[in-house]
Image 1: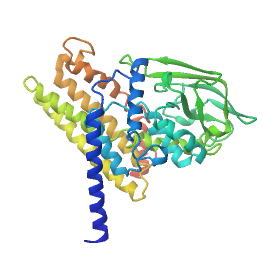
Image 2: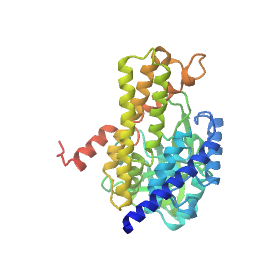
Image 3: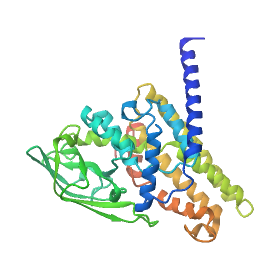
Image 4: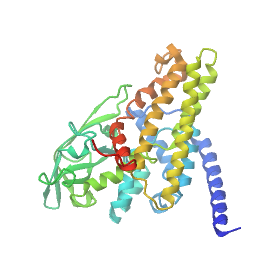
Length: 391
């Protein structure tokens, strides 16, 4: 056996052992039911679960051990995600830190920032909100108007952020501010870390379509942030944002395990309702299941490129298009199978799966908008992957 084949065999053995260990622990410990995150009680319950994950070494398996991880490979992280959602694991309350801020810190943060921020982030001791969108600056991120002005020892921040996920319950926010109003749009931005309990910060929560208190506006009035909480270079905030965006749009934010599990639940729902489902419903279920498999294969392909040291920056837009449309398709197929019962919400006496499918559908509708609208992602694919000219 060649060295390459031996190494491959060893890796396969390690991956199988990793999967078996993860599966056994998750099946023994995943909570059967947690209340929605969008309430103080539900948020606290999810935080407790994340801390249990961290204590067992499963919160961030692909991170270095010094920050609470297991030094797992990309392949093993994908394996863990598959097992996590197959076991019924809930969405991660640490997502805005672990999946969005952490990749930027690993790439562009200082050693001091990594040592200070990453382990508390993974342990759900410090929870992060994202401060990107503003009134008038959503998909056009470079249009942000919130400002940061240099003062002795740091910066004074002014402005407003909106659509900040779960900011009402978080400790800090990461986001872009304009530090040079005279520079070109993409050059005068700097990336800051902002404590949400700092003087001058006001957080105002508002509810999603499904009723959860999942979003907030954050108002900043002369908020001081020290120099140590600038990520990357002053004026280099766009580079930091792009490091975050690649992760947000790609596999780190929405791994295939989440959709494989949802597609399997959809198949089980169809089997229970086969007698009343139509041929069109059956076709929609089959297509959604196949698309979930396709997304898994695509993501593993991307993981292979990353493991080989290749960049998948623009290809993350393909992933974002795939998972956001897949999420809607799975939920839409479920509503078709349910028929009139699809409208029964959580708590209704005859609601199937306690109204989970209509709630999931309402959330899925936001997928083509957040993490960069799908219209923008189509432009990225057209220009950067297909080489098509701008209009």
